[in-house]
Length: 48
Image (cartoon, rainbow, N blue to C red; front, side, top):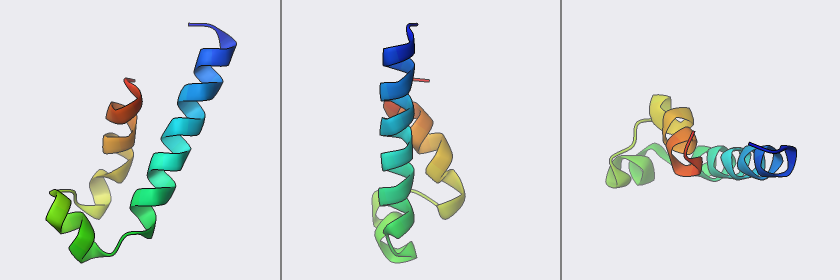
Protein backbone atom coordinates (compact mmCIF):
# COMPACT_ATOMS: atom_id res chain seq x y z
CA UNK A 1 0.00 0.00 0.00
CA UNK A 2 1.46 3.35 -0.92
CA UNK A 3 1.66 6.42 1.30
CA UNK A 4 -1.08 8.32 -0.52
CA UNK A 5 -3.54 5.43 -0.14
CA UNK A 6 -2.63 5.04 3.53
CA UNK A 7 -3.23 8.75 4.13
CA UNK A 8 -6.56 8.61 2.30
CA UNK A 9 -7.68 5.60 4.33
CA UNK A 10 -6.63 7.28 7.58
CA UNK A 11 -8.64 10.39 6.67
CA UNK A 12 -11.71 8.28 5.84
CA UNK A 13 -11.30 6.42 9.13
CA UNK A 14 -11.06 9.66 11.14
CA UNK A 15 -14.04 11.17 9.31
CA UNK A 16 -16.15 8.09 9.99
CA UNK A 17 -15.17 8.02 13.68
CA UNK A 18 -15.96 11.74 13.99
CA UNK A 19 -19.34 11.49 12.29
CA UNK A 20 -20.44 8.44 14.24
CA UNK A 21 -19.14 9.96 17.45
CA UNK A 22 -21.40 12.98 16.96
CA UNK A 23 -24.49 10.80 16.76
CA UNK A 24 -26.68 10.22 19.78
CA UNK A 25 -26.87 6.79 21.37
CA UNK A 26 -30.37 6.43 19.95
CA UNK A 27 -29.21 7.20 16.39
CA UNK A 28 -26.38 4.70 16.73
CA UNK A 29 -28.80 2.12 18.12
CA UNK A 30 -31.09 2.66 15.12
CA UNK A 31 -28.10 1.80 12.91
CA UNK A 32 -27.29 -1.26 15.00
CA UNK A 33 -24.03 0.24 16.25
CA UNK A 34 -22.95 0.54 19.87
CA UNK A 35 -20.75 3.45 20.92
CA UNK A 36 -18.00 0.92 21.68
CA UNK A 37 -18.19 -0.35 18.09
CA UNK A 38 -17.46 2.96 16.36
CA UNK A 39 -13.75 2.33 15.75
CA UNK A 40 -14.37 -1.21 14.48
CA UNK A 41 -17.07 0.04 12.11
CA UNK A 42 -14.74 2.79 10.86
CA UNK A 43 -11.92 0.30 10.23
CA UNK A 44 -14.31 -1.93 8.32
CA UNK A 45 -15.56 1.05 6.29
CA UNK A 46 -12.06 1.78 4.96
CA UNK A 47 -11.27 -1.87 4.40
CA UNK A 48 -8.57 -2.35 7.04
